[in-house]
Length: 346
Image 1 (cartoon, rainbow, N blue to C red):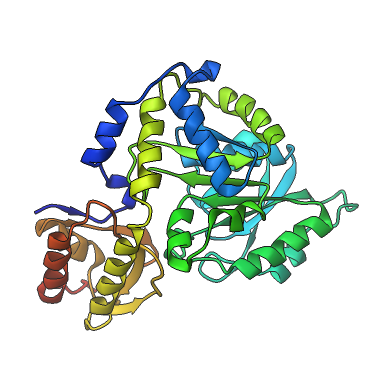
Image 2 (image 1 turned 90 degrees about the vertical axis):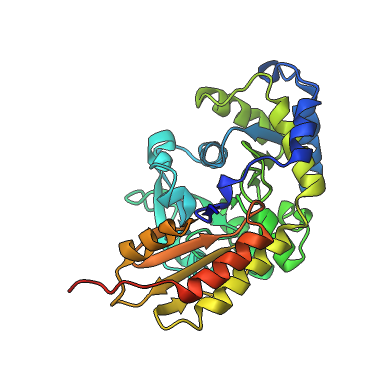
């Protein structure tokens, strides 16, 4: 049995999703003539209470487009030190937009309005970069799938309004946050200038992310997407997968959250586990004790058909998802309690 818990990006389209893709009506989206993409963009924009939406091949491209949209070269954006836009997008902030990042030492990838306000550079002090954008991430990837408090997000919105800053949400796993906290898309749509959402993680699609915002911003984003090479032709097959996912595979994310917490509960009982971070959604981060050989531990799991990932600095990550079945779950829970653990060589 092979169990891949490296990420929720490893899923494959379900039977129902494949059928929806095969039946999709397609056109050339570069000319905005793909009816299924147009329907998806309209559907997601309406969900969030926004005027428009734009389909992207990846979440990174959607985020980078938003940053380019809201900044000028030489500007600075504010984000938590764990932010995906800083850590995992290939330096795109500087490469694509000529922008630097002011990183805040938050809690599990989440910052406070007070911290944001303290990080804004004085606009009349020309020696420092002009602060123009605040980027949040929900759920936080490096923060272990943590969900933001909506009231804190509202407080940060007020700071942005006071100082004339734009406000972007990297919502790659926002679907998970909404299920976990019982929130609605419009709760976020009312707050942010732009939001990116991903279909190829918890929702189980093969490809695709989307950016939502005002009609004016999405018209500008269309040009940026073109410059970045993100225009796609008959991509309605991918849009059909996303529509199917929203209609059939969104609410089931609660299953993934439950399984992640059940794994965490078992890990907390094991003597070779140093600590398990709080679990809210489908991401579980834990540390093994200092006397355990990390690479040996990962290799032993692989020998038993289980694949997880190291995030560095002693952190290991497990991500539950659509293709992680009940049978796999029981196997893994049994395995982790009896697996031989190699001691580190001093």
